[in-house]
Length: 301
Image (cartoon, rainbow, N blue to C red; front, side, top):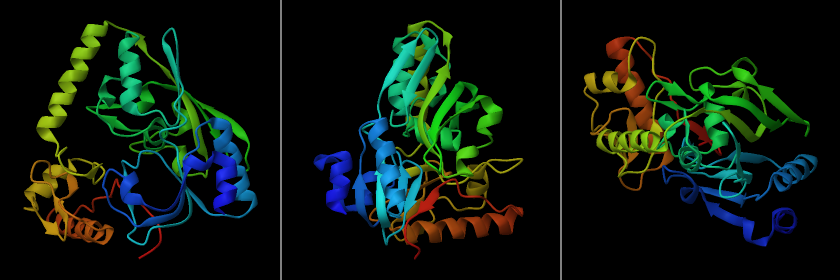
């Protein structure tokens, strides 16, 4: 298996028995049998085609910013589309970026090109691929507002393209990519001309706001729960008296109750139990069952 993977992605891009703590912002998770990092779109497509042909299970991740990996790790091959797949092209008001490009880099490119519309994504620690899958958003804006099209590889190995909000089936933290085994290759974004200094000023303002309100000093996976209808998860959690609630190394942040943080050697089991306790407590008090925003992957515990 190792030789096969090295022949596909190169010797330096294959890791064996690799701890997923090194590849998630939560800093939690057991080992992946193999982790590979394709550097080009062709390499990615060839790797997926070969793994499917050989019936080898694989899992796609980006920057691991919205993931909770099982303490038992992940079977088969983890394909990390981050660090590679990083091409960005600007053409007038349009930016085309491959799936491995970070949102941080995308917002910086937009700013330096005098293009506005992506400021809201400042500080979101994900990749283009993950942002499209989740319809990432912040400060009353979502990625769907600026996406023109997305190229992908389907479950049969054929290339396809989606155009517009309807074809992407964008919803709150959702898209068509959560319904299919399609792999995002690149997306095209349509922005508007703006003043670079004003764009940069807005980005700096958002950065300050994040540092002030979010527990960025601790590993986490961002917002732990989706926003329920008619309210905010963080307020319900706070009102239920759950601020600082802890299970093992996992804790409801005292700075922002919408975050569950790794306060010290947390396990996936700790986080899952804390999620369950928070859900039950909020449901008992408000009659609302919060839905986790964090995606859980890996071997069942």
